[in-house]
Image 1 (cartoon, helix red, strand yellow):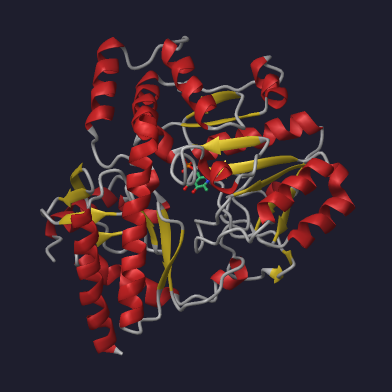
Image 2: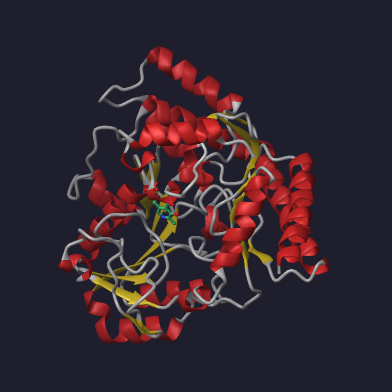
Length: 432
Ligand SMILES: Cc1ncc(COP(=O)(O)O)c(C=O)c1O
């Protein structure tokens, strides 16, 4: 595979752009540089065309450069890209969100998921008058000091039922984790015990409804409902981080999919159809603290009109014809996930594609995963080799095995991906 132009671009970029990449996730030995994206594909500087299942880390729910979003943004550019004042798009998008996500009475917008999560913890603390927050080991809620704790701890982890708090980066202050309590995922007893002992100190429980950042681990039957019951009982705010699941798993996100209603929700990625916008919202009683400015929500670029225009076009596209586009995304995901499993099973390959259809994860070997401690038993070298070989076949997904589908993926993409997987398995088995 010719990557000469990408390699040259990387060398040049490193001279001025730290590490030559814009995000720590892209800090791999041989990153490719993209020229353009179109529908389900993107093309690098050397002309290699990839079937893209990363799709902007999930942001490109309609695929690359979708016409409906382009048209909406171009129309808005002509009117102005930034006002620093109110505009009608704010309530037009808010009305869509409130209609689509029933637990949200009032909403505000921010520029990234990390920022929105940072703010909702403050909001939950203000609302409850308490300071501590329960976070689950292995869940990712952005990179702020508040929450970049025990995301992927690989050493000194403590006991499974009482994980130690591990700061994920040098530079996080020693007291960054003081107000967090880290618990294992899918263990209701651990949450109950903590709430019984310290419920009066706990402002919030925050979680990814499905642990997509590590393994795509589903909540066990009754687990989310159990969290809902326990948090209500102890007056604790239940926060769903739907940055990945929102406007993807269903129109109303994971809360619709599982039928469990949080107090506050954070969303981003797919919401903006590729533009940098996120948001948060929830029950009126809590959000009134924002509405009345008792908890000020600031930000120069909040509710940016270009991003709102992109979000409005995306939400309208996703919800048209009773969610036809969403159904297509799920259908394509199901075809690919099941197809891959068939290929893996037929060849005795120790890998499975699990989790949901609009987003799934390939894990190896085949293990029942309950929490982060199970996740780290996986064979990452092997998963990375599979990933690398698939890249050589021009199929691109996240190195940790996550595949995300978009409205632009078609049968042809799925068939080509399955053919590529067959060839890769043959090669990898040949090397054993
Ligand atoms: C579940 C989850 N929460 C929060 C974030 C942070 O969002 P952002 O990257 O927009 O800051 C991410 C990003 O990948 C995420 O996956």
